[in-house]
Length: 183
Image 1 (cartoon, rainbow, N blue to C red):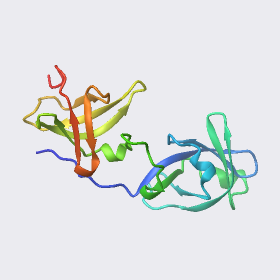
Image 2: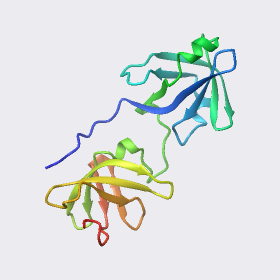
Image 3: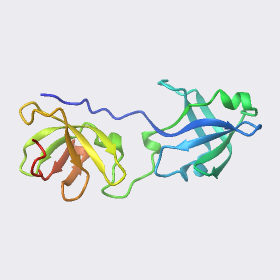
Image 4: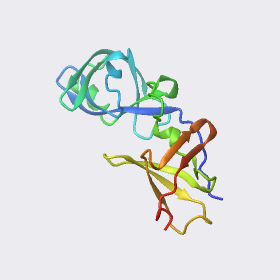
């Protein structure tokens, strides 16, 4: 039976440095969070180079301001364009404990990946392998168990008519099976 390993991640990406800004060492970041205001509340940011498991360092924030489609950060001891350029593509990550609380019934993607998807009648369909963010509504990509479907994936629209209950603590997502979903 195909099953994803359910492991809580250590770090969650909340932003990415996309460019140096100005000549005093500021960096422009693009937020990867629904809570971009979090940067104004942070005293420091933890930067990771692409692909790194451990942080490059914890950089105290001297200032933070919004700018068009991004945020400009001034990091302590980053005082030139050259120093800021070395941080291009660095990821800003927070620990799971530092995540902003979500309203009831909302979940972070990492909480959904690995959940077993079942119907209301108890039929085991497969495991949530990814969440596709389409704009209108999210779509849960489920890797079906072999006996359930010949399809390589089942696409479950994340709408209340289909997704009836999500219980990360139990490892379950309960859905109402729509006609044609398994064909």
